[in-house]
Length: 328
Image (tube, rainbow, N blue to C red; front, side, top):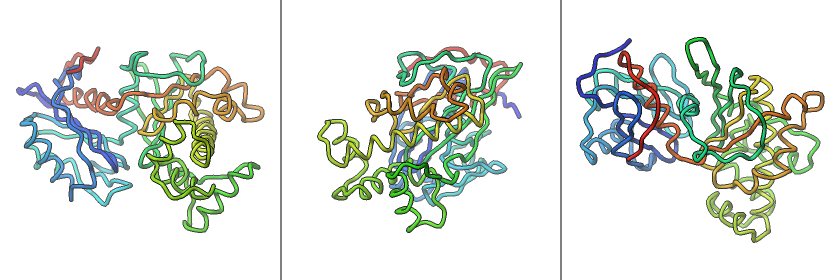
């Protein structure tokens, strides 16, 4: 359904298990203003979170689009890594907008990809993207998200999924077996997200004899090159991420490129921009050649999901010009 707007503003958000990023957008989807990041866990509900944003910024909008870290079913969302459930109707009531849309966070991020510039990306595996082929957007943060972007005669369509909950299967690698067995002793189902997430970094480090640190501390120590279990953990994490990214690229046929989003990838660029990562990505036996020319890029900005949500919010009104971006 399309809605006629008189306020020329949309409220947009990217809601994760750790942080909730908000902004306002004009209804061309070009300009993002009134940005505010709030800690998700410090609020009791989405209604409380929205009230905090609107009261602190004074934003009033006609429509809203929220990207949510979890599946969307019949206009209702349930965060995978936070105990929240809410609907598009709840968003309308909390904000006073006349129309709201909830989408998966990686679905929104995928819609933002065509609007990213070279300065928003870091290439960790060179290649030549086929502009007529699907694109994959995936990555670790509090959880692990994945979506594809498929070209059609009427433009791009993003297909969300729950790839983070695929079963994590080990290779002949001894380290992978050790890590898998540790997780299997705790969880009935060892998913990709258990490994490729912030909590996964902490658990992996523990498997390797680490002293019990936060994911942030592990990433920082590895970046300093201090050696020890932190470097081993991040190198292992990067290799597994490469392998899973290659698997998903094969499933989708992502010759248009692979984009790594989420909060962790931009912080471990040295581990990703490595021969070990590139080798693990293409090591698929007879299909290694298929992956050889697929470029892999890291989304280095934190507002890609907001940009995608702005594109989708603009679609709630007719004849919106959706080309270009500005930041304030």
